[in-house]
Length: 443
Image (cartoon, rainbow, N blue to C red):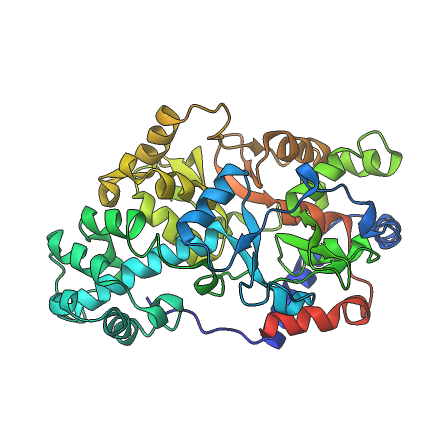
């Protein structure tokens, strides 16, 4: 499938403005309370926020392989990490020193695009591509798909396409077949090669971090306010905000959406928090989406389809539903791709693996308790405090709002919860960190 056209920085900002205006219009928090909370967060310095566990931010070198990046994220139980520019190791300027932030979403998008490019090349009658240079294969795939992402530029390796051919691909040629469908039909040897050999083990992280859901590196200084951080994590859709000390080379802290939720949970017992936390989520306007906007996957669908659906809708997880009533029976998160990438031998029949088979296989082979977390749900009359407690204590990034029949009617994300507590004063971002935001979104 063709990659969506890249938006310019001004267009991204306009999209953020439109989103946040919609959210604010749906919120039902009393204006006086909203103003008081916003003023309070504006007076709290970023330096007062707790440090990351261990006191040191985990970073990934830009020339590290995708395989190594997955291992680092998994070993440290992270969803993302800053990527350092290997060509600017001595620079003290953050603009030169950091390339961006890599997360599981960028990795799975790269894997899926690689599969679709290989399929497109084969559709175009390029079975002989196994004897052509990698650049030619990538160019052909890009021509067929209209893609412009890193995989199209770098091209697929000879080994990957060769494995697809050797795997007995029987892709029909012609305009009636699309790359996404053809990718589903690739032989299992293709996945063995792309995940265990090439290009998974040789592709550097720096070549994929700008594809699709690239997370820009937008830092704040230690003397910035927490309101700036909360706006970046909500309105501007960042999952983590680096904290820097000007003139110093290393990141001082990394504030994530989840860390903020944990911070809010720690405020339990304070009057201002208890006052809001006792309100039902439905009375606050949550969930902000309608039932028709919920993206889900059926338990009997292929796991590949679940990851594609997350990619196409730019979301980090989907509920797994079953039956005519679409009762929730599970949850698939973008970070679950780590199970496939780190233990692909568990999924030798990946192209036929259903969502439920995927979850069952993970549960049966996982030794760490809580590694695979069942869907966390709430009702429209659940309090905001109970939702925050569940998110923080269960270490999940979303809760599914269900009806009495357990049908999913909405999703509450970390970003939604943060948005409940703040609004943006007029010209706030422009006055404080607007230059950094616009500059990095344009990069």
